[in-house]
Image: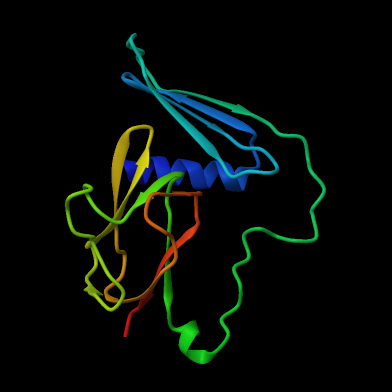
Length: 163
């Protein structure tokens, strides 16, 4: 299963309101659990047995009263220049790294120009290092996360000026 498929599954589970989803395929088992105080938690385990077809189990969640603050809302830009910036967000939960290895240079610095598909950072999740690529071309304006810091799903990582 590719990272984009896992990301789509996480987004689907987050929007559906389900508290737990398990997906079993021939060589991988993925369980996504959500709770009211945290974002989705993804557990990926290799399977020792082979199954013929994927099995999806969705556990419905009891309705929860809406709180007054919506965690999905991002702060509004302070001026017109900030509204042009594109926010690159974390597609997964894990540990953010600016370098591919401790003895290597960082992927990008503030002021660097990136193109679509350029690697911006890596996020380690369960001993797997996932390269996070830019979805837009532009200039890095701000790096919002410190190196070796934990990140949540959909957490802003970079601000990119596409102009």
